[in-house]
Image (tube, rainbow, N blue to C red):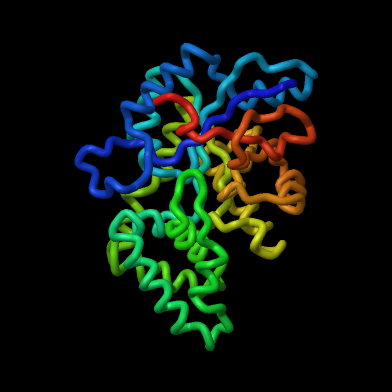
Length: 308
């Protein structure tokens, strides 16, 4: 069996004196410890190893690859200096919209809403706003949505899963955007532009990282659940993010798609393949199977699956 391990990271920072200590993330010290653990037990690899293995029908030996989602400022200020010092290549997947338009993605608004107040208050507000819009927009009752969506997973309680799912995908786009914006302004900040600058890397920071050997791939443009949008919008999401990758590195010849939320289907694979992408990353947990059948369905481990 031909496999390697791909690790997925999001927030990496020190919680000491952090304004939002509830934001789930890996402590800087834990990140350094984990890299040392990987160094002792694996060989750091890259996607060229995977593509070479496929082309030449050879096996990958004990390789591990590091991936970082969402284009967070942490990746420039914390992750990049550590990787550079240790001579480790990292793969980074920023959604292009927040960087280009200086906005905060709904997925991150939800993170900071959850970090700024208690869950019961958020759910109470969501219930009220759903019921206010129910008849006008032909919505289900808030209680029905809760009963359908509130299913815990290995990281989040059922209440948090409900908040994430209802605001990420279940409500019509205009309604969920309206509710998320309202909650973000009420519990986090009115200055979205300034918040965005602090949350995400800039294009110049990404270019600096690229020039030092880091690699950037696509995380779509708007970070939507790609299977929930129509084909026209899907193509726009892919094409826009591809152009963004080339803004960072015009010589990028190994385009990789990191599916937002790990959400993909055959239609998505077909479209990215047509546009020259060579691999696709999921959030499915496990070893990445290196085969032509699996190259657009590569599994990843979460950082929490390894010692820190």
